[in-house]
Length: 511
Image (cartoon, rainbow, N blue to C red; front, side, top):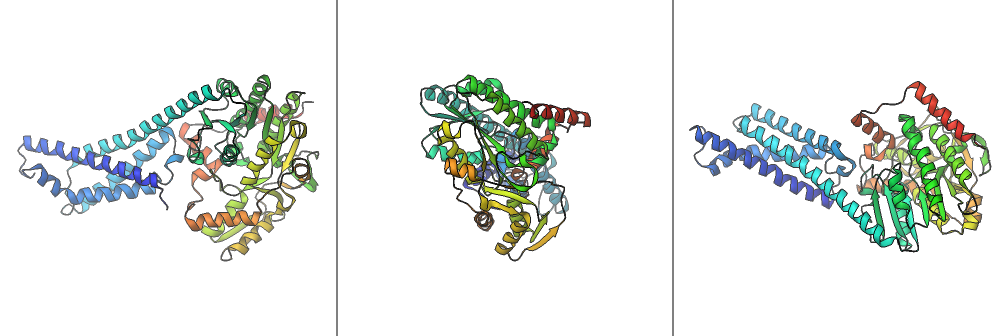
């Protein structure tokens, strides 16, 4: 468990609040005892505090252990809003329950006053939760002020790029690339996974931040002013995550894309780049290019096909979107994921000592997350005459591998792990993809191999950069499931799923 510098700063602040609350609790208890002439209490306050010092020390030890185990310091930024306060309240409650248990069992070692410690508990809960809420409010205000200031300054810039959903897996790396190339970037993102993925660049002078749900048309209209290019990465990504709430998936992946594209066209945006997926090919024994038949086997793929159809319909001489169909992504980024096959199998090999491969004969076209962002930057810089109105598969021919090949590769790099070949897990995808179009037309050449990506993940574990790969913050479906439980959302009824499928079919069938 590796702590960052800012985590130690938060620990120090929590320690000050905890001990301040304890001293105030002592003072109230001492004052009440003095008024009641309680002879069991020392005559001076300093003596009273010294008599409680062993208990106070125990409190501090339990407090910080509980906060570490609850992930307050190791993944505090992945906890959002009211849920963060709930986690902290749980940690404080566990702390004082354990303290009470120790004091009850060992009263001679740890003197305990119920009233004083109840006051301390309430003050600690109030201060630690309140501090987080206050800091979150200040952060939101700072982001809003940065947005307002940036909008006023950058409307006159010649080259301004709007990136929608840019604080995610691919976007967190893309933003840095664009800034390094000298572009001014305006980001629209709800920061579902917190600000940590772009923490290193969030204060960059050429980065504007609009913290908003990109389904909000007023925010999108605001963000379009002065923009030359739009890169739309925002989506619910992955088959399991999309299946949690299909109506929500359609709103985010399909309806929002239509609105964003229509706004971009209305504002005269020169370049529009849309993130799609090679999952649209579904299952095939052939090597597939951009003209091959689409056979989606999941709602995620179907929603992306529907989006592609909408963009094609909107295409004219002045608005010519570029569609990028990414292969199966792997590797580390600002917001790393371990619900992707290469990353997940490598993590399991390191931590669990097992590499369980389902459907070892299934083909996938793998592409590193850094190469995915490179493809976006390459398409952005390509002339409209070359990339506009075109669809490109993103990856390399060498990235076409079976899941069995991936398992054996990981086994060779983590020889202590056991390789287990199992049956199918129900995933019907099986496809190899041709990447000659993006290579020939855009001169795009990926820099990473799957072997290098596996070594990158191994290094992350060895260095302590990653420890708990099963953490909610690393999985789209886990995070969305947790959000659904927290907010009371439920998955759709059978009838609603049918209506959603029909709506997607209708869009896909448009001519």
